[in-house]
Amino acid sequence: MRRRRYEVTAGIAAALLIVLAARGSAAVEGSSVTATTCAVAAGRDASHNTLTCNFGLTPEQLREATKAAVEGATGPLMDRIEAISRRLGITSSAAQALLRIVGEQPDVPDERLAEVLTKVAADYVRLKAQVAGLNPDNPTAKALVASAQAEIEAGHLDRGRELLRQATQAQLAAAEMARQLRDQAQAAADAQMLGAARSMAAEGDVAQTERRYLEAAELYGQAAAYAPPGRLDEHSALIERQAGALYSQGEERGDNDALRKSADLYRNVLAERPRERVPLDWAMTQNDLGTALHRLGERESGTAQLEQAVAAYTAALQERTRERVPLAWAQTQMNLGTALQRLGERESGTAQLEQAVAAFTAALQEFTRERVPLAWATTQNNLGTALHRLGERESGTGRLEQAVAAFTAALQERTRERVPLDWAMTQNNLGTALQRLGARESGTAQLEQAVAAFTAALQEFTRERVPLAWATTQNNLGAALRVLGERESGTGCLEQAVAAYTAALEEFTRARVPLAWAMTQNNLGVALRVLGERESGTGRLEQAVAAFTAALQERTRERVPLDWAMTQVNLGTALLRLGERESGTGRLEQAVAVFDASLSVIAAVWPPEWVADVRARRAKAQAEIRRRQKK
Image 1 (cartoon, one colour):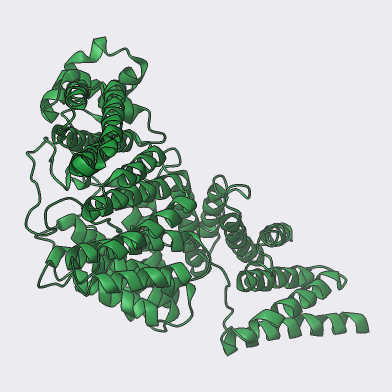
Image 2 (cartoon, helix red, strand yellow; image 1 turned 180 degrees about the vertical axis):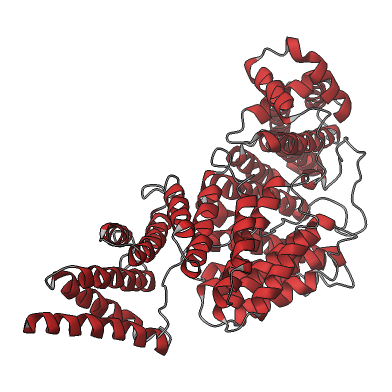
């Protein structure tokens, strides 16, 4: 009987595109604002500008500029700062302010500095446009807003914010006076309140630009409260901006409570913007609601949030049709696919994964390589991930081969030079699909290609830059090397597998990621056991027992029963091998007890042939115990 190996590998680090719908006064399709090569668009979609400029500087030079801006020592680097200001079409003092904001952001790698600076600049340009559009009726407020506009233009954001706050207070004071003359001047009061709402929202834009998302959300909420009762659309738009700020807080800072509040606010907007009155706005809000629920569902156990996300995306597609708004339709199809994939990963069967494949395939009808090459590549990557998951659950190799083709296609646009981390991510994903293929096929060609893909990914997934992604790829590399080692004579590949798993455990610590630590301990144990079976003595087998025993500290029956049972089977097998080489029956009796414990869980859920294999190992241990007891 062919012996089976029981192990798990780290999940695919798929880039799942989730995009909040652009907001503003224009329609979704056909009215985007364009920008020159290194300028930043200033319309409704400025905050969604995907163009990144390198400003003619290397990442190291840009890092020096941000550090100097934070430290207030920009004198020696003014030539660089002047170059950046000319590229962006802003003042040099504003450029210094934006560099300081970027420099104060935590954990931004050098190669992403230009991207983050471009995004901050886009928010800054949008901020200027918002402030320039303010036109208070109150003379005092008008003067304060004009002064704020000048300060913001000069890059003095704190002073500009303070002046906007004063403008708000001036208009609130004027509004109070107007209320006293309500019968004669209701319209004037409403105008003042609307002006106050817009001023406070502009202050929120300052906080948003500075990545102070909770402050921005509070300011947008206060602005919405100031909107007059007759200006429902304005109120809805401000609530939507508040929801967007909370989503950013939840997405970037890991704040699940902010995500829940964001979802609740999007539901409030849906109540104010019914489908019958504004169908496309209603659909955009459904898409954004789905995105908040999706992100929350990824972080929580169960499937309720993900199911609600699927429902929201499906609702959005009732109005976001391919004929009406093709790119928005493709975007929502992409989002739907990612939510369905997450659902499918948590459920038995393949129905949800099949639907995810269908959604990604639909998105590719509009997300073409010629039209939007990087969106096309991201969709190909996500399609490959869903196909891989399907292939893991099905017999044969058809789905896995399709996954390899999708990842390979994605790498045509996701090049190392263009998007190094995305390139590495897709190389890792390609490696996992090739490894699965290689495990099911004879020979070693697919496994050797998997090792090459993981090795390539590690050129960008370095421990210093992305420690957890590095550890994931090391774990996956170890899995491919272990299967190669099983098929080759000697122990070279198996030794390399042990080294890869051991490296992964440097970042996959029990304190930091307990279940990933336990998974890698389990995988390390499998490689050590196979090495021990090929070597004389018991040293490697004892190390395998220690690794499996460590894994069971986190892989408990209450927490992850199937993973617990898998590791119990692996532990029992290692104890059996040890018992066969040692005198006495102690190890063999431990093996029987471990197999009995695992069978209490796997008997009803594992394939019958797998269960039979475990029973055979248990019977072998019992037979050896009886034989030795008769002596």
